[in-house]
Image (cartoon, rainbow, N blue to C red; front, side, top):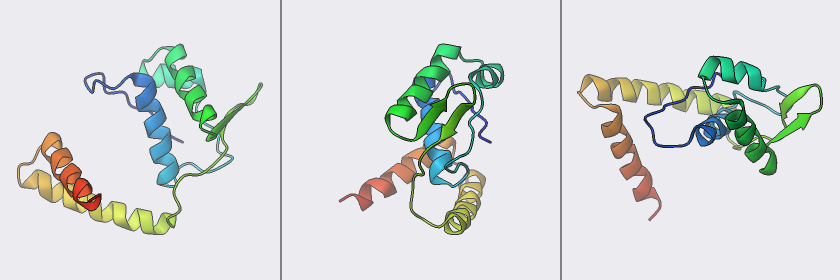
Length: 126
């Protein structure tokens, strides 16, 4: 089950943060087709966002073909994202956790880490 977190200081609208977190959970294999997402009421209770915000995020993901709402049953994952073996993703994630721990021990803050990772990703696009 996905636990949504909203960063009010991020500048990114809450509905986009929710949609991004669902996409990330799909890519990481934490959500799979057939899985039920938290109810709108549950997301409102745990994240403090407005019900319309949750509905907007879920609708956006429905339009993208990733979710489907079933009347009276809830919202379910319809499609997966990513094609990498979940075991490989978990191994890479564990290595990244170690790397981030090392970066923080070296004094880097989240913004520094974001900038560093962003620069590496940008190099790979050229």
